[in-house]
Length: 135
Image 1 (tube, one colour):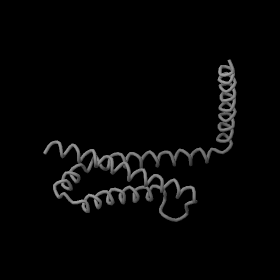
Image 2: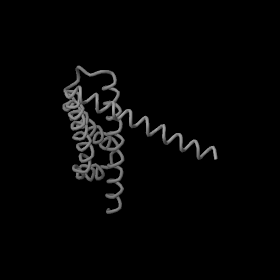
Image 3: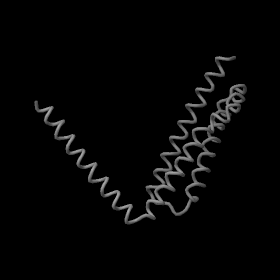
Image 4: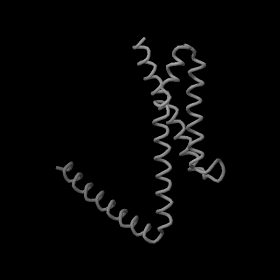
């Protein structure tokens, strides 16, 4: 019984909070259209960078094949570092360079770089397994 009441009340409270936040968001961006434009610009840049990060290791699949033939962990590490360097360069280009960013922006960028590094490693590991199976 109490569980049902808690779900009912919690659902109503959550709906009210979302409705009020939506109304305030619409009012804020109606009064400040330049901030809405800035938000969309950031969203476009983030989507472009995520697309670049997602495609890079797949587009350079032949590099993973070459690294597998060399059988060197140093070369594999250099390949991953090169992928990360390209990801960082593109992100900094899209964000307007190194200077002028807040602490929050740098935290988000660093988390993005770490995520890109893990993604590159996982994709290259998958490609290496596929190459190893074909040999």
